[in-house]
Image (cartoon, rainbow, N blue to C red):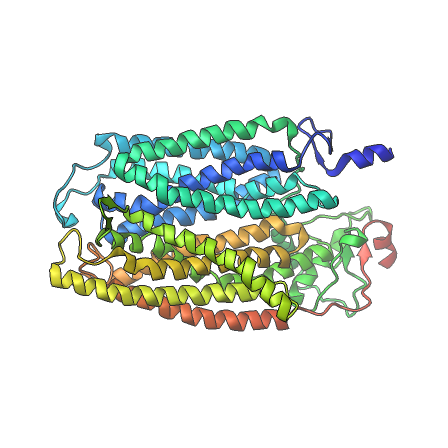
Length: 581
């Protein structure tokens, strides 16, 4: 028996459902097979997103604000659907099946997008006019096919993103020191893969789309994802699988429903009437905050059947630990809310900033830089920032203050501040670009101003993402309950989703408020006739205000780490419940 324990992983099974043999399953190689899926997902999603606004305006002849909103809605939906993917993986499918199914969905989506951009009847006739208001816009059917393609890709992205990193870490046993070290290495490689996929998307793929053809670019994405699926499936016999444990979303709903049903029940002066069924080593002690939720753990007569037998229904009675897990999630919400706006500023880098680039001088000798490839400075800023932080800042802080770097809240604060500076820089640069446009005619295709003026805004927001992404991921994973790690990742990803959606909402509001009575408005048909500088200025002001709110929320969070109730006595399931009552 001792040999069985040493050669198997306690909480994992192999593809046949037997305990996973440590020597034949898991480890770095099976984990690496899932990275192919992730790099192709990044290649597809970012390769489409960063260059989609130029296709919508230049080929489909849509107005500037409409094009920007389509891109941000696509990205927002992609990240929002991560919640669906996580729910299905935790409750029904498991991570392996979820990855395989949604990777296939994304393959179909990119394939359909390649076909739609190839067929002339699925786009309006070419137009040589510099003012797109004089061109024929895409028809409802043409836009319908495009939307189906985009949202199939969004569905695939959502299903994948919530499971790939988790499935990769499933291949390592945290209780084994050697495999725990390999897991840390996997995390660093995972972020590197994300950055590599994005870098390839904004350089190689964008160049192919602009110079060879959109259909070629999207077709390559589809073929790459199909190949990655085959590679992923080839490791089926070597993977370790974790059983579905139920969705944290359901657990949260159970606590809320149980507390509402017992809202008229008085909390006992002592804790002797509270229910607990978690093992001793996994329990979380009761805290003083959000005491209304504690009513979900109060045992009443309704928790007994007519014959006097105790009945544990999770929708009417929840253990203290589950209630405390929900409380921990609630405490995260103020920080969660104040990080959303960062991703609204991020959205400008792949929408309006790309449109700015299309109007500016982009030639270096005989080579013309694709407008969407300016985001390479964004990715470069992330890599430079993370490298400098890892090699310079962390050793310096460890030497001077004995700390292994900034705290997760400090990293988030730095990211928010840099993004606000980025928007302020973008506003200043846009003032200069508009002045050149006014002096040379707003209908000109290329303005005599270098595109490299945009580098500061890309670099500042990119550096901000380097701090923000790592800070958010660390905060939500480490500060969330152990039983809700999928939920913590979902909370992080919903900030991206809501940030993109808020960008769309803000553009619509600004367009309606400033473009009424026949006025062009700040954002409209043509950015050379608008006031994008004012829009960027508004975002900068909102970002600085949000930064201040974040500092208040961070201070509250550190202050309000609730004290535990001392010497707590809790009812456990079984005979002890009956003894207490």
